[in-house]
Amino acid sequence: MPRTWLWAVPVVIAGAIVWLGGLAVLPLGIGLPHPLDYAAHAAGFALFALSLELAWRENRHGTPIYRRHLILFGLLALFGAADEIHQAFVPGRGGDPVDWLADLAGTVLGLAAGSLPVVLTRLSGMGWQRGTARRSDPAAPLILVADPHWSGELTGLLEARAAHPGADWLFLGDVFDVWVGLPGMDGPQEKAFLAWVEATRREGRWVGLWLGNREYFLDSLSRRFDLMGEGTGGQLAGEGLAWEHGDLVNVADWRYRLWNLVSRSGPVWLMARLLPRACAKALAGRLQRALHTTNRNYKLAFPREAFRAAAAEHPSETFITGHFHTYEVESNGVALPWAHEGDFMAWHHGRVKPLSQIESRHFGAGPA
Image (cartoon, rainbow, N blue to C red):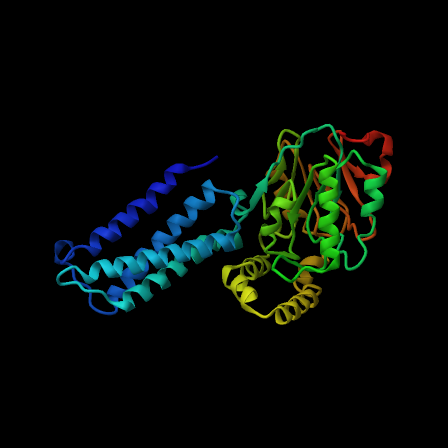
């Protein structure tokens, strides 16, 4: 539920910063010597950034965290510069460029503090999504594709669509070994997949993509899908189905969660955008190789207790994930098997079952 009242907090803080910046003498004659005045600037902007981060996160759910942080950093940098210019015209105050640097440092601290829940908790609002989470025909079966890790042919994809033309589709992440959504980073397999998505949607079928730990900065492609999202909180309206990729299930694995946050952060996006395409592709290759060994201890054993707790957050729904490459059932939670050889599952009549167990005739031919 949106909490629009949270926007009042940064408005009040901004007003206080402007008011204090316009005073020749601070209230009660308070004077802060160096470097305490810089610390005060940093603290004020840290609170400003943190309040904006919380208000945005709770009220607008379509912006990935890296874009949100870059936008907020830019806005607060401009605000801080304007405030310093304003103070330069206040008798007895003057502007100090170091104050502005302190403002920037405080902004970074505030945004970092607002990101701690991503590392330490499972807040439902930590994810983002765009598009529609409502299918035009909820009775139509939904093919579930978890972790195909395609590196060449899109194994099983064309065959499944031909056999079940009336089905909708949900991809639960790790579509390729690594998929980076930056200009010049897409190869033949990514283009072939997007062409498949376009053709499937043109036939009237709903196609959703929930990003996994091997997808980076793909939000620019969100309009190519009916639904795109990342993190926690995926669900289909009125269908009793909730999901996430699965990499954020284990709250205790804070090292991975920190890596997940940093690798999808604004500075990393900026660095990737500024690198020459050849260097960026080489970096993606190194990332692909690193992902085979990253977090190996976590991957060796299915986190049963953590998975059961995550499923319990959706008591009236069936909760599904990919990521674990193993078929597991815990209460209302289902971890889907690895779809590397076209081993797809399906959501049909309120149940999760292998696609191979459903006759094609159940899927109909879809709308004309």
